[in-house]
Length: 187
Picture 1 (cartoon, rainbow, N blue to C red):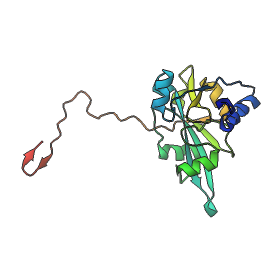
Picture 2 (cartoon, rainbow, N blue to C red):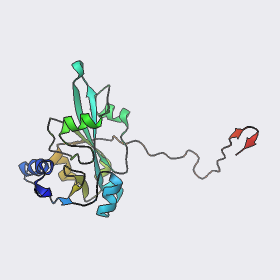
Picture 3 (cartoon, rainbow, N blue to C red):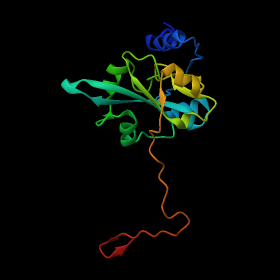
């Protein structure tokens, strides 16, 4: 079996094909499991890597509603912000097992579309300024380039601010001194 015939990759290819898009998938010998690994292998800015992160909103009877966030590799999802934009009062990160069961893909290879169940998709607006972003194609070694506009259409995503605000020191430009005293010593 060639790597391109891997069932997970084929699901992604078929999902794109149904929308009239042919993907240019590249399979690497090295892992593209993390955004940092993918950016280094492809030779692009970390922000151009699309992380497909799975969250869940619990329902009665233990049912979980999946929400996949397409996040720039530079960002982290703010749970309160995600809850606000989705209207979910309780939301949490999915476990690896839940992510696999709800999307049909393993963490590190979860694509932005082609999931096994209906999945709500939220896209980080920080992906939009790039002419091309790179997303997982079903395995942790397969990725493809796509414009942010095509990514939004292929994944049927809505774009909303879901990233944590970057930490910026309140006293930029001012000397800040931290002292820690222990046992009479100042460090």
